[in-house]
Length: 222
Image (cartoon, rainbow, N blue to C red):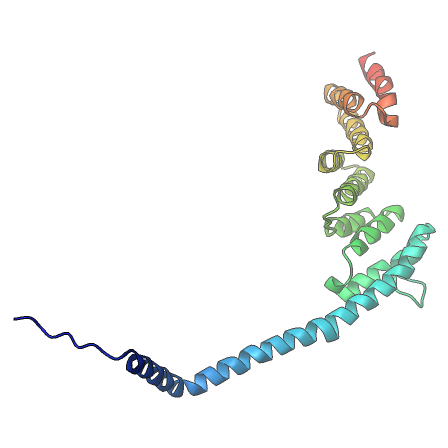
C-alpha cells in the first residue's frame, strides 16, 4: 500500500519561512539592535579618529618636519635635531607625534646624532627607520655601520656594511663594500678584504671604488 505524499503549496512554504524568520527576529530583537548600534559606534569612532585626530596630527607633524629638514640640508644638525625654539627638531617631533610622524624622521634624527658624535643614540634612531625604498634603507644600514665603526665595534660595523651592500644592488653598494673591506682589514682578515675589493672591481667597474680597487688589492698583496 503506497503512502500518500502531501505536497505543500509553494506560497504556503514561503509564508511559513517568513513567519519563522519574523519569530526569530522578534525573539532576538534587542540583541540585534545592540549589535548594529555597536558596529555603527565603532565605525563612527574609527572614522572620527582617522579624520578628526590622526590626519590633522600627521599634517602638523609633516609641517614641523619640513622646517627641521631645512636645517638638516644646511648642515645645522644640532638645530635640526633639537629645534630652534620655535619649530621642533626631529627628536622632539618623534617625542611629540610618535607614530603619526613620517618614518623618515628616524633617519634624519639618526644622521644628526651621527654627525654630533652621539653614536649610540644614532644607532637607536636608525634601527627604528623602516623604508620600502631599498636605496634609503641601505643608507640607513650603512649609517648604523658608521656609528659602530666610530665606537670601535668593527665586527658590528662590518655586519651592517655588508647588509647595506646586499640590500640594494646599485652604484652606492660599491661604497658600502669598500667600507666592509676596510673593516676586514681592521679585523686582520686580509684575504676576506681582498675578496671584497675584487667583488667591487667586477660588479662596479665604473664606480670610483671600482677604479681604485686594484690599489687596495696591491697594498694587501705586497
